[in-house]
Amino acid sequence: MNHSASQQLFLEAKTLMPGGVNSPVRAFSAVGTDPVFIREGNGPLITDVDNNTYLDYVLSWGPMILGHADPDVVAALQNVIGKGTSFGAPTEAENQLASLMIESVPSLEKVRMVNSGTEAVMSALRLARGYTNRSKIVKFNGNYHGHSDALLVKAGSGLLTHGIPGSPGVPEGVVQYTLTARFNDEAMIRNIFETHGNDIAAVIVEPVAGNMGVVPMTQSFAHLLRTLTSQAGSLLVFDEVMTGFRLAFQGAQSLYGITPDLCCYSKIIGGGLPVGAFGGRKDIMDHMAPEGPVYQAGTLSGNPLAMTAGHATLKKLQENPGYYDQLNLQGSRLAQGLRDLINKHNIPAQVNQKGSMLCLFFTEGEVTDFESAAACDTQRFARFFRGMLSRGIYLPASQFEAWFLSVLHTDSHIHQTLEAVDATLSEID
Ligand code: PLP
Image (tube, rainbow, N blue to C red):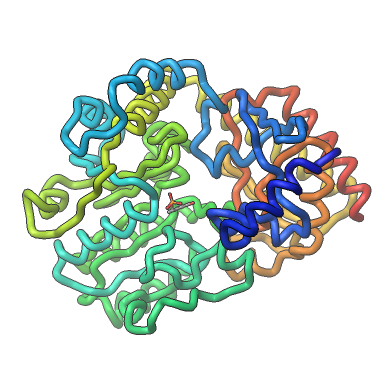
C-alpha cells in the first residue's frame, strides 16, 4: 500500500499541531507507524488521501453507527445548513432531539445539550455535587470519562496507550476528591462506601467499559452500585457516551435493568457532529441554571447542525429496531471467528464482545478490569494492527480501544476481516 500522500501530510501536520494531531491516539504512536489521512467515508468504508480504501472498525470512535455519509443524515443536514449554522438562541431542533431522547430512555426526564462527552461528564458531576452538597466522586480504574482535570486519574485508553498514569498539569488538589476503585471489585466498592459513604456525591461508571478494550460490568456489580449509592444518598451516574443508543436503543442501562440517576451521552446522539448531553431525574436536573443554582453554559450548545444530525440518526435507529439484532449478530459472528482463529494459531489472546463493541486482547487471562487489560502484549497488538491495516482493515490504533460495528457491516465484511486476521496472525505468530 502506498502511503506517500499521508506521510507528506503528517510531516506538515507535525509542524502545525503537537504530534501532528488533535487527539493523541490518532498519531498511531502506540502501533509504530504513521497515521493515514482520511479523505472520505462511505458506509462502512473509508478512503485515505493515497486512494487506499479500508473497512472501518473505528467509526470515529463510535458515533457512525449508520456508517459514513448516511443518506438520511446527509439530507437532513443539507436541508438546514443553508439556513444558518448557529444562533446561540433556542431552536426547535433542540426540542426534537431532547424529546426523542427523553421518550426513548426511561431514566431521562430532562436533558441538557453540550458539545462533547468530556463536557457532559464534567457538568453532570458538578450537578451531582451541587445537588447532594457533597464533594467526593468515585470512578473506576480504566474507565475514561473525558479529559476534565478531576477525572484524569487511572483513566484508561489514551493514558494507558501512552504509558502515563495521569497527566502533568492536573494539581493534586484537583483530584483529591476523586476516589478510584477497581472495576468489578465488589469488596473494594463496599469498603469505599463504608469509609466515605456520607461524602460521596456520585459514582460514575462506564457500564460496558470501552476505554480499556471492552470490559462489561458484571450484573451483580451493577446492582451493587445501585444499592450502595441509593443507601448512601449518592447519585449513580452512567457514562453512556459510547454505549448509549449503541448496545440497545435504550442504552446499556436497559441491558442491566438499572435506572441511573444521571446519564452522559455523546457520539451517536450527534450523528458525527460535535455534541454531548447529560440528563436524568427531573428533580436533579432542575438544579441546573437557570432553573437552579448549578452553573453550566455553552456558546455552541444545542447547535442546530449537531441537533439535526443527531435527530436524523436516532430517528433512523428508532424506526429500524432490527438494526440492533443485526449489530449484535455481526458482533457475535466476528467475536466467534476471532476466537476460532486464536485457537487455530494457538495465540494467547481473549475476545470480549458486547453487541457491536468488541476487543481482541493479546493476553492469556480473562480480562475483567483495568489490571487484567494492562497485562496485554502491546507489541504483539502493534504488529497485528499493522498487518490488518496493510490488508485494508482499519482498527483502533491501540490495544485499549473498542472496535465498533455499523449497521452496514455485512457477512461479507466479517468474512473479509477474518481472512485478514488469519493471514495477519500467521505473520505475527
Ligand atoms: N466518556 C466515555 C465513555 C468516552 O468513551 C469518551 C470518549 O471517548 C468520553 C467520555 C469523552 O468524550 P469526548 O471525547 O467527546 O470528550
